[in-house]
Image (cartoon, rainbow, N blue to C red; front, side, top):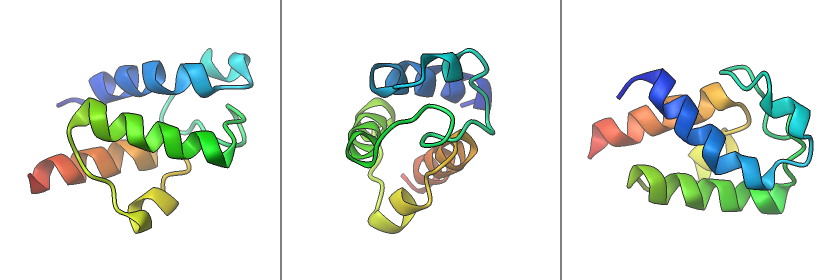
Length: 84
């Protein structure tokens, strides 16, 4: 799976939780979920659950704690998919 496809799917997942909609316009690998999109910590857990469902993976707590930017999420998704 290509980074671009993961990026597009991630954007769809985070859109409903995004408080700062202008952050979605420049959505890319360096987008920060909290700073750029203003997704609060409770909703970040929802994002992780949605990512697990969308990509059919399980994200452990350590990985979840490191998922602050889109690039982090892409790397975790690729890593978890490679394990399965």
